[in-house]
Amino acid sequence: MTPPHPVSRFPRGAVRSGVPAGGGKGGEEIDFEALRDALGALRDRERVAERLLASSARHSFDPDTELDWDAPPVDGLWYWPPELVSLYDTPLWYRMSEEQRIDLSRHESAALASLGIWFELILMQLLVRHIYDKAMTSSHVRYALTEIADECRHSMMFARVIRWTGAPAYPVSRRHHNLGRLFKTISTTPGSFTATLLGEEVLDWMQRLTFPDERVQPLIRGVTRIHVVEEARHVRYAREELRRQMLTAPRWEREFTRLSCGEFARIFSVAFVNPEVYTRVGLDRREAVAQVRASEHRRAVMRDGARKLTEFLDGIGVLRGVGRRMWRQSGLLA
Image 1 (spheres, rainbow, N blue to C red):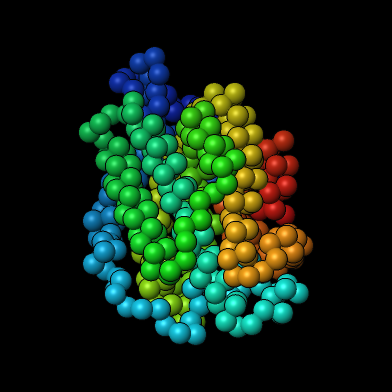
Image 2 (image 1 turned 30 degrees about the horizontal axis):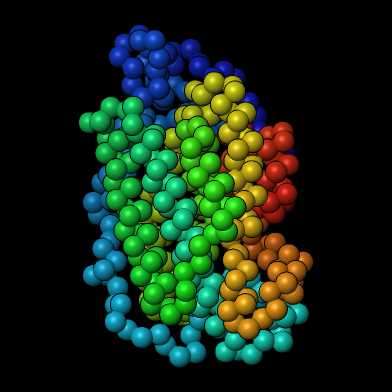
């Protein structure tokens, strides 16, 4: 379904003379609350940031002290819910022993933590670029710096949990590593926030299934609980800013966002499973990759994980044209 277009990118009263305030140019200040998209009126940028700062003060964690890193893994418990393990419900899964399945979950949890570090390093650079020319004393900038601090702690937490599992780190392929370097160099602001949401929301959906699951290792559940609580603020910040950008950015930038993020969706969907994990647990790598690609269960998991995000992006006009076809090719959009 094609989302409705806003009646006007700049409704009457949306622009007034004065000092630029987060988006105005040429001596004009944009009144974001007068701007509307398919989801309704936009909220004032500073008020959103102030609420997120208050939430950060109440609900932020230090993983080094919050979690029991000295506790050893519990025999027989999973490192990731079995239904979220890539080979679940494939012919190869049914040939594997229970011990081998749990070991695969151990390696896949380490691979996802490795992917998370790669992604958060990109995100932190994009956030720094975003605030570089913003008012340094604004709540909007202050919250961005708070989020960067969160992401630093998350990356250190993910690195520590990889070591705790005893599995190796799983860096993304050299091709994806270099594509990430290119993306963070050429990405525009709306493209940056679209990619941010893609990296955060799919993994967040999986982690919301993980932290209450008593079949999973207590430390893994603790790590995912911290990440879910703090990422909820990051998602809110990115969604609000992306809505503004899709209304105020020039047309070329919105079109470029649709294309670049369609390509990032294709990269992300492939990078989400590192094939090296299959070799590490004694499986035939080519057979395992083929079965994952053919798995309807795995396709459903990825679509379900991205559903809230794709509905949001559809509503604000990101999923259109060639970019929409690229999202379908990624398997994240039905």
